[in-house]
Amino acid sequence: MQTTVISDQTEWLRWRTAWNALSRANPMLSMEWLVAWWNQFGTGHQLHIIAVVEGEQLLGALPCYQHVTRLGKQLRFLGSGSVCSDYMGPLIDSRCKDQIHAAISNYLCGFGHIESLHFEGVAQSDGWLSHLEASAAAANFSMRRQEMVNSWSLELPSSWSEFLDSQRGHGVFRKAKKCIARINSQELCIRQAQDASDCDVAMQHLVQLHQARRQSVGDSGCFADPRFEMFLREAIPAMMAAGNAAFTVCENNQQVIGIQLLLIGSDTVYMYQSGVDPEFLSLEPGHAIVAGSLLFAISRGFRAYDFLRGDEPYKAFWGAKPQPLQRVILAPPTLKAQAIEAVQRNLTWLRSCYHDLSGSGAAKS
Image 1 (tube, rainbow, N blue to C red):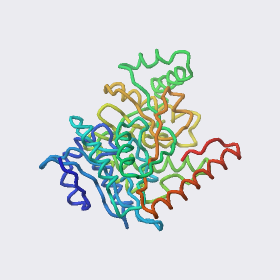
Image 2: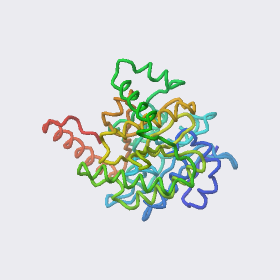
Image 3: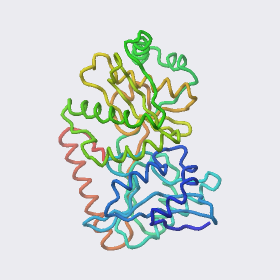
Image 4: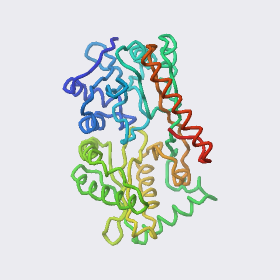
């Protein structure tokens, strides 16, 4: 077993089949997702993927890049920032999980010529963190964890009727039945767009409806950054072709009034992005596309439906449970790195004090 670094995209692409086999559970770790991110957001930075190999076999990897800042170099996850990739961490062959976790952690805490390591979107329950903490302590690296907004996951039963039975007495039971009644009466039509040939039209609806809804509440919307749309337009067609993405579409009189982009893992459906027409809110298209995508996930035998990052109330309303996410920050034991980390810690503390004094509660970083 050998730990090596992939710094060239051509070399990285050579591992596509093995990489995607290791990332089946989380489509946000797939080659298609991360390569598209790198092509749109990687300009000016250096690819730095830690790979654990044995001969010609890829056993594990940590998808990273060197992010250049005015305060020096940081090592970050590919997929970071406004794209909001969740449940990030190592890709691993489960047959040698502990060895891979240890190999990657030891490499990170022996890596020089860098001022900090910033890993965001890591699940608090990720077993890799204990290995990373042990390696950091042995190498005298400081390690800090920042709470982020939660991701939200809903365990799925084997049938829609079981789902409704589990929600009796709750608001979601009435809301789900109301959505299905609208679908059965043909007031609303819910369909799945799963073929790559459907992607271009579905993306047009997603951009239009997401931006219309965000602007109606005074927000610029994530598609205000043209790189975000270009990223999705590159990633999603290939993911749809591989069965790793789909759209749930809601129509009224053949007009699309709601749409949802789903990412599809081996046992979980992830709701990544959505949009609704603000002129049709009385028909509750947002709830209709959730009900429609839940029906899709249950009918296909998925074990969980994940709403991903963000503490919006509708996620708990549908019965999802919070999954704490963290940002993990490490700094090597050099004078410059520790000085920068001390400043960052103090800034975090001051922001927390400000939020407490202003009455807005603890800051979500």
